[in-house]
Length: 219
Image (cartoon, rainbow, N blue to C red; front, top):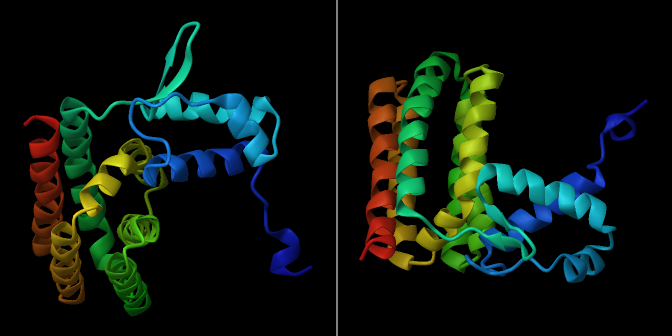
């Protein structure tokens, strides 16, 4: 039996969840917009059951809200929510980095470097969805190396809840250029096996995003 034979295909719910997240991150479903379930079910080629299940997951993450007798709406961007999530990420990701860095192999760092390059290329071409995906993969390559699946799961929930904020941040070419420089500095710290520098640079990386988004959410 080959790996292809044993590969698990996503369930209808998982496939719909991925497509809904992509629609929110890309801005197709904008903050405050109503999620029109019937139209989306037809578009995705599924019944409304997996769609409702996916929406319940997104509601739990804070990406959508349910309003009685009106249905689901994409959550409005909130400065308070952003600050809370990023503060929790700061604490959890620092622990993940400190545990992961002594375990990093040359192959791990090469994979991180590949994602840094792919993220840059996507950003320069203006493909914000691809940039968001590569950015996520490079960060989780580092988190996953810690070998702490429960910690990784908690960090993933936080990321899922704030993908839309990253898409807003990446809309600026100046911010995309800053992200490039920050990723390269983090990569240099990993190559030097300097956990302290890596944690500090990741803190600054998040802080720059928060600073920009604060100006938009709390003018």
